[in-house]
Image (cartoon, one colour):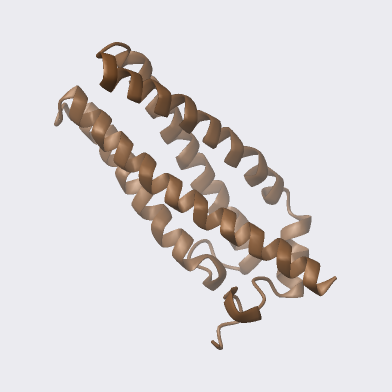
Length: 162
């Protein structure tokens, strides 16, 4: 068992009562709750368009636009998530409760940004761009899973406290 107050495993609370109250009272929780599923829908649509392009060679422009939309959602959710973390935990990023999620978020952002750079500079072929987008999407799925696991842990802990 660890001494860090925010780690979820082994029965340690993810949120202190004060942090939970701040989480529940801030508008940033609602904003994150709206943006996360919108980003996921953008991801699904984009994934379909990217796979269609790779399978058929058709729809490069639609796939590219969809990746840029998904990337825009990612940037917005990262900025608003940092604000949420500041309100709830008192620091913009790397609060102990979400340290690893934030670390992997930066990897996801790096991959999406590398895609934008490759698109802008023509550093990769269209197929290479789509491959990079798929790598970014794989990282996004892993990172989204991290956040969903934390959400589940928080709900289980809230139920246990109640």
